[in-house]
Length: 179
Image (cartoon, rainbow, N blue to C red; front, side, top):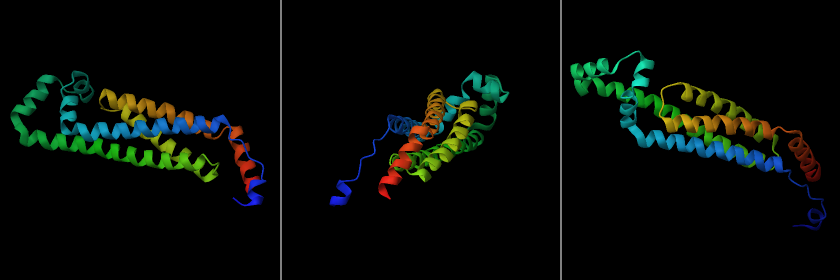
């Protein structure tokens, strides 16, 4: 460190920056956990969903109708349905994983008061909340819904925290010191 850098006043990072980072990291971990849940569950997870009477009721089917469809078509007819349903869930999981990575990168760079990173966290956060609202209100396992609710809450908290006035003052102070 040069002498001129050593003499610069230090800018104290407000606690709201760390709180925002923690909320962002909770969202990231929950997003990764959601993806892992889907990837490890596979079509067996979809089968368990389709054996739930509440899920069948949402689909407008009864357990008897589902059993009849399985017996009439056998695995040849039922497997493509399972694969299509799993494909939809896997696509959502992949999207959640990508959003988790974007939130992680944005959170790390926002830690140093980069405005573009706070904007990135906000945009990715809004998209993540929208995706998780779809997951929570659609057919999903209990862990997926739980992680979805956690993502919604933690991302909403993170977005609000990143834009608190103390964080804006911190960013301006860091910019002034670095100029």
